[in-house]
Image 1 (cartoon, rainbow, N blue to C red):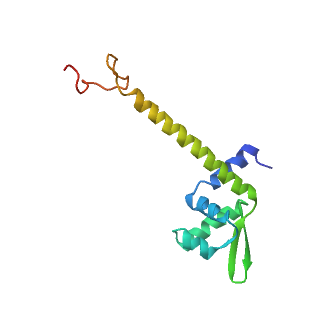
Image 2 (spheres, rainbow, N blue to C red):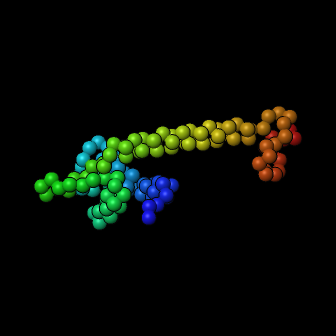
Amino acid sequence: MSVPLYQAKAELFRTLGHPVRIRVLELLQDGPKPVRDLLAVIDVEASNLSQQLAVLRRAGMVASHRDGPLVMYSLSTPDVADLLAAGRRILGAVLTDRDALLDELRADSVPTAGSAPAASGETGSRPGAGR
């Protein structure tokens, strides 16, 4: 019995839900790397990195092969890099929108002469009021 597509997508995104896994995928965008190079850049124990690589391998996001004594990892498909790029674009848009909203909220909270205080639940008098 196969799983519904939405469930498979949820599993894919769950796989991306760990910072070490994201960092590994980012590093592998530049090409295959041995585990020792990943360990040198990512500040985790070797056993933790091994677990995270296993999760990525089982999910089909990375592939591994031996090159002499080294175990090399690479992205399984260029689409993984495209997914990371889409995530960066979405995050940039969300954060930009959030910054714009924060700026707008700050601008709206500055009372102007003769205006009522912002409806933010604040009580008490404004500094300089009644002078």
